[in-house]
Image 1 (tube, helix red, strand yellow):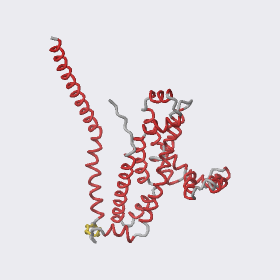
Image 2 (cartoon, one colour; image 1 turned 90 degrees about the vertical axis):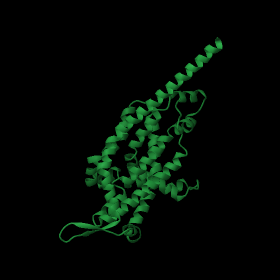
Image 3 (cartoon, one colour; image 1 turned 120 degrees about the horizontal axis):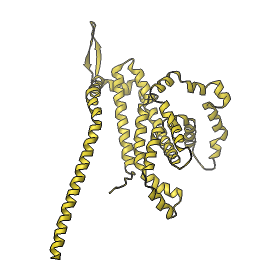
Image 4 (cartoon, helix red, strand yellow; image 1 turned 90 degrees about the horizontal axis):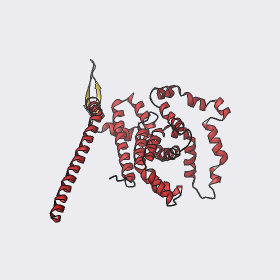
Amino acid sequence: MNKQANLYDDIYDKKNIGKKKSRGASLDKRKARAGYVFVLPFIISFIIIYLPIIIDSITYSFNEIKIIPGGGYYLEFVGLQNYQEAFFEDPHFVQTLTSGIQQLIFDIPAIVIFSLFMAVLLNQKMIGRAAFRAIFFIPVILSTGIVESIDSQNNAFMNYMNSEDAIETGASTGGVTQIISAVDFENLFENMKVGTELVDYVINLINNIYNIINRSGVQMLIFLAGLQSISPAIYESCEIDGASAWETFWKITLPMVSPMILVNTVYTVIDSFTSESNSVMTYIQSVYTQNDVLSGAMSWVYFLLVILIIGIVAGVLGTFVFYQKRD
């Protein structure tokens, strides 16, 4: 009788486990459907508004516009002529593209490292933590929307930074350069056998600190969200085991926020390539006023290059990303 009762209990438990799994699967499906509902407005607007524009842009890049004397125009297919002109005939496009990529390679590590460093500091328990977080996010607000357009036209802040008044108060970027020259990094690192390339990179970062802070606000928030999602019990166990703060950062904090490093790196690449201050974007817009089909070909070359760089970044960083398994 006991064996038969145990057999019935096992069958009952297996049925209940199957029901729990089916309920869990149905819950996941409902969540997935809810996600599609949230993105449905974007999908509809993309198909109705943006997709025809994208198709027209691709079509124009392979054609030349011919104006009809009586009014109107027609397209004459020229194949890859616009792309060949962009690469081999235009004297500035490839040079501007190369310099933009080089600047991106220097900027991305600085922005990601600075935003992670500030997020770790702002995640500490201290008085006025919310105020400090708001202060570091203010440049993001000031550099978007109508404020950005006003600043790009008037450029009041940078005009002040380069003015004589700013120089007298020591606020100009030239003042920063003078401070760096006074410190003389070459003599500082002479005994350390540090190359001039690293010294130039450090000087460039310091001179460009205003731009780095401006572009680190969103990444800082993402890192803060990742840091706050780490269970305090993990840090408590590390403290009990006697781990130092340095060991805790490299073995706990950094692996746990590695998915956010990937997200922030991809976001920084896209943000840098699509910024209005980007040299390549500025050049393509200047070409558009003279030859719109040529600028379309340049835009698609630029777009494919951005996709390629994002794929490389995601592939390289994806091998180091740690995803915590949640049961």
